[in-house]
Image (cartoon, rainbow, N blue to C red; front, side, top):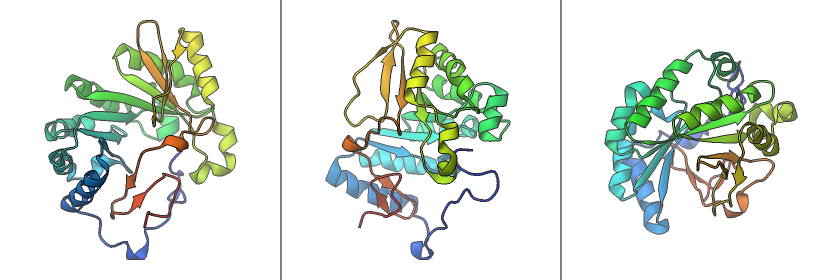
Length: 256
């Protein structure tokens, strides 16, 4: 519900008329290879939308690895993982960020409007069993899933999976009533500190998340988009399906 309204398209703009057809796998590879030659890319992350809906994803992963990029990551809602994760792992995927905003059925439904929680949890277990690095991303929203901060923490910790909590971003269709749902980093950390003692760690350069560590070494993160932005040392570029490059998620104007 933080991405798209229940009715309509959530205010998403239509693609520009002159955008043309999307890039093929070869087209993506050509652009990524050129960027890698100039910039020495460390990581390519496949995101969306929902990348698992892209039928040529294994081929794209394979091509990116062939370019010489060792770290190929993906952000997904996890719904299709159980059927597709083997192919992604075989193609060379190294890491998964799974958007999971609740670990109990009713809060999960409040946020996702779906009843597929078990399928996603099974996909997470399968990815872990295959040896992929798995992280969980949770967007915390007051009144919808703020009661899931601790249950998600316990779920992730029990499986050795790192969890990052995301502040709601003040953009899209929730812009007008953002304050009704916003839960700041300070509140998220305070909730977890009451559950288990933790100590803050220095933020790594260009990292989106700040981390806290428990006495046993387990770490959780918070991506505080609003209360503590990390724009000053951002080192990311975004490539859309038509080959346009953007310097920021919030910028609708591609780099010329």
